[in-house]
Image (cartoon, rainbow, N blue to C red; front, top):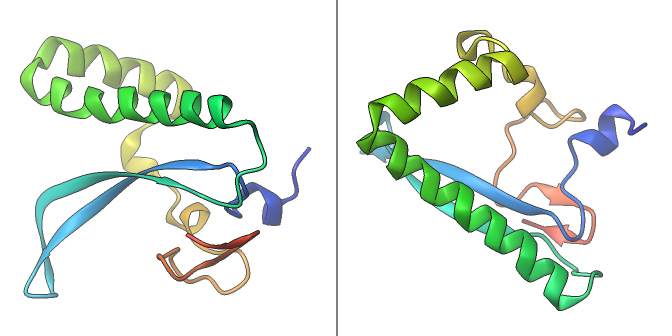
Length: 116
């Protein structure tokens, strides 16, 4: 089982789906976000396997705008999300921060093998 440190550290071969909020005038979130896919190096897996992970991230990223267009689909996903992860309003913000510094992960956050 992974330790807390391992669980929240970006590792080589990780593929991250990032929701980057659009911040207006460096102050306020306007409610919109960009969807980015990022690979964390160094890649130690075969290229084909990395491509499979990136393809999965692309499929997941495509799902977000589909949910905006299809309310029925969104409702189904919300029900499943609650089963798997609990109520979205009860997200533990501490779990999304660095276990060492309590700072939010950023593009400069240290990871195994470099930065994001």
